[in-house]
Image 1: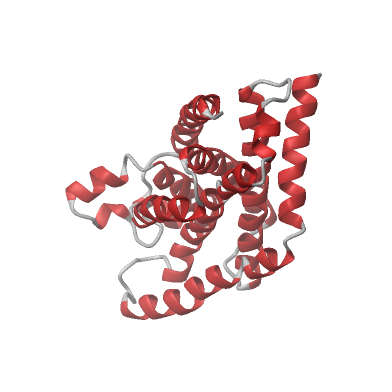
Image 2: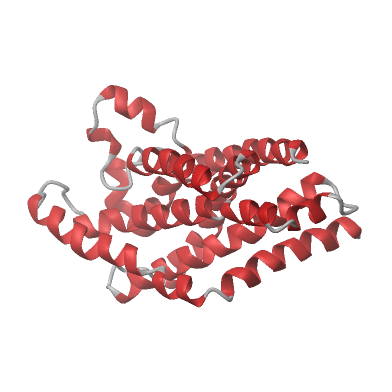
Length: 255
């Protein structure tokens, strides 16, 4: 019971901290909106006829959802830096619960926050007329949650070794951008050079974005599909397990 209570308390703390930051919630749809409207329209106009059966804005919409999950999830690691600076992390680490429960509580709380932001973008797509029906929306939620688990774990792991916000920000940007641009979020990876395809296929976000496209675009995405949906989900889940193990180890090293 102590472990469960500690895990729940950490989860609730992260969620409450996010929900009280109304500026972040309101602004969370601005960047996706710019990508979808400005970038989508601009590039889509130059690619007219280049993607049979798909409008370019429809193509990048699942990718922008993946981008939101990526950037939000990685940013959540900053909470570890704050907790270190204000001494709260030291209090957590001496609490009578395991490091696994500490890591899992923070990871689940931050993943919930990232899922909320991803859901806002999905709803934005519905408003913009991208054909997000209720069934597709409900199917996307568990996939989005799976995507956030591994990405949040990366952010928490990095933050556990960082001593300042500046160091964390630099490392975060260094990881975020390659993960995003090599995930196929903005284009089908089948059109890339062989070496870039190989790099994209070891990127876990590639399979998360592919899974979202399978759900949201249906048959129109089939010619460009990277893997069947269940394979995509299995790869993302396997990545999550690895990163949770690594993150628990990293938290175990903190003093």
